[in-house]
Amino acid sequence: MKWSLKLGRILGIDVYIHFTFLLLLGFVGLAAWMQGGTAWSAISAVFLWSAMFLCVLLHEYGHALAARKYGIATRDITLLPIGGVARLERMPDKPRQELWVAVAGPLVNVIISAGLALGLILGGSWRPSGAFDLLAGNIAERLLYVNLFLVVFNLLPAFPMDGGRVLRALLAMRMPYARATSIAASIGQGMAILFGFIGLFGPYMLILIAVFVWFGAGQEAAAAEIRTSLEGARVCDAMLTEFHTLSPEQTIGEASRMLLAGSQQDFPVVENGVVVGMLRRTDLFNGLKAHGENYPVAEAMRREVTFVDPAQALDFAVAQVNAEHGTTVVALENGRIAGLLTAENIGEYFFIRAALAKRGQQPPPIPGARPSAPPLIRPPLIPHHGETTAR
Image 1 (spheres, one colour):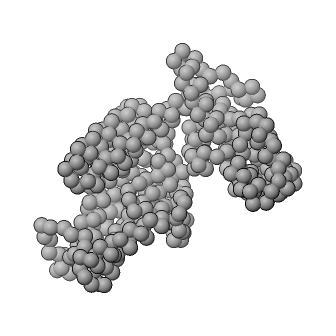
Image 2 (image 1 turned 180 degrees about the vertical axis):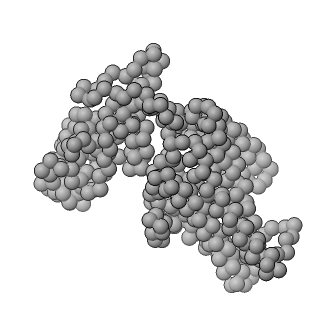
Image 3 (image 1 turned 90 degrees about the horizontal axis):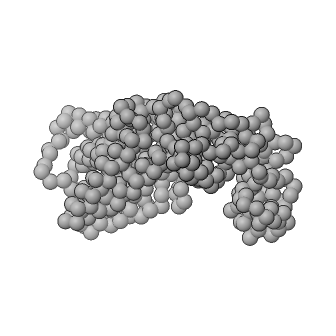
């Protein structure tokens, strides 16, 4: 994510912090100093908010480690002023697995709350009061209430919170996945309307939450529809089979002329029959701007290339395309390029398939491609975590 600073790599997952989070800490410190009038007030407030977001980070690690149990990697975790975002490569195939991944985050907050409560009770310092103030009082007690709030808030049955995914997983155990998602999304949008109405009378933060929930639920429903429509299709059904490649010795000037001559935007770079990089359109433009037309492709290309198998299920490959922010991935068969897969290809295939489905037909086979696989008899895939899990 842009404007993010890397804090480190923990348990094999990169952790980032968005620069706006630092602005938030500065604002919290200033507000506490103006209210309390002392430097200690500002320091304690900043410490509390930092501890809160440490709990959010642990919450995201709960999701990430539960997903890892099912063979799903987490690309990174980013801390934002609105919470944390864990970018899972995909969600588990089975509703029961999605259930465990979804509840793992709130479960971490339950464990933290229990530990804080036990420490306060044993230390004899727990003095619950009717009022709750983030800027005053016992830090451990305030942190306990914050974690309890995170548990309750995240388990509300509304996408994209964990409770929405829990509801969808429970429904998907008894009905088709798309139907379960539609019901869960409708409930989520109903709650968004309720939040928005209450927010008109205060607290106004509920209006922002309502907008977040409304659009999050809509995106989940749309993603589920796409996933369901692509079931049974393979990469070879949607991939681009007429494409051009470059060699490392060519110049980006030559690549720019190939770009203008057709609709292909990213070019695999091949040396001795092996894919050694990818020249993306943005890298081509940046190279032209900085170095001119004679700049070698080898210097402008990216050496990190994502590969998929032409026989791979298309709905699974969609997550890999999303993980690369919609850029081109290479379909590789027996070490040779069989085709290219892009977000545009997937979108076009989806609309062709949807149009023909209304006539009870199947999309025509792509020339040179192998026949499509029959529908897979398995639980449908769960969409990518929005890229993410947001708190």
